[in-house]
Image 1 (tube, rainbow, N blue to C red):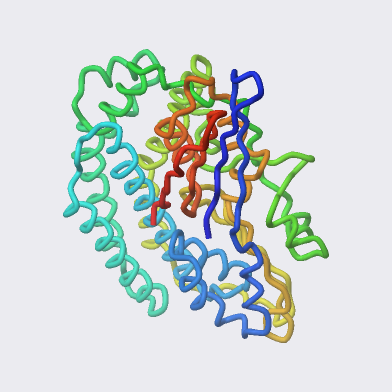
Image 2 (image 1 turned 30 degrees about the vertical axis):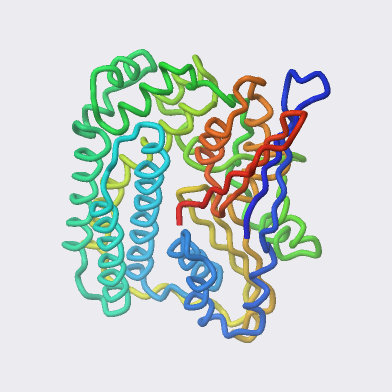
Length: 391
């Protein structure tokens, strides 16, 4: 499953028109129909490796399968850990291609292994009620060390004191960390504002309306090309962090372009250790009481914020079995033919349409599948570039 991105030159040669085509299977959730509802979460990771923990959490919400508050909190912590892993992998791979500053394969393997170890610990704690706060606190501290030593080059607190784009540029010009080098390159090569658009951010949607759309007669069509208020919306780190001082300053001066998107991603990554510590506190005070059981016949919705945006699972359960199921992934919003990615690419000036710039923008918006880029310069189509997702 992949995306194809075509950049076709206009007749006068002064611009490029993007076209996004997808062969993603948005009906894949139909394989759950007829299964006992309690089997769905165990099947989800086999279908979705990327953001598999988020998919599993959303499926348990939709099917009403969380039995205790402790189990639900452990699952929420895993979603946060997965988000941290995806953001780190993004920085370590896609930023590195522009800075030539290698993070090292050992660090990447260590991060992935730590997430897997945490997954095992939290899964056991969620089922048995055992104490996992120490494991979670250790992971939060380890993640903060990775961020400070390998991405920022200084403390999270120092970074959070940067409140506007001028301070950011000064910081980037005086540090040699991965983040500083990347942001300095964007500044020096005038790439901060490329692809800047006026985004239509996805707001909180009414559960009843969203469920009716996904499980209704046109549910498959809505999941394939979602729109709200007659237009596709954007979801992801930029939508979640657009009102923070630094991102707001960048947007004021450079628009919602490449820099704003990547600073929003970094800001979210930096917030995750403290978010995990808050889950720790909640687990320590959790009494382990059972959650009220869901009826065997019900309709449920699971909404989860992931690294790439808002993920939604909707389920109709009858006699304990799945009667209808639909999944709406953030890629369908952001890479809608008229969505954020297409709008950003359309804003590129003719001399900005290079494989490097197109790749940088697409990865900043971040699909959950690989993609190919075809650039038609008028006389020929350049050889396509294959880009894998952050698997």
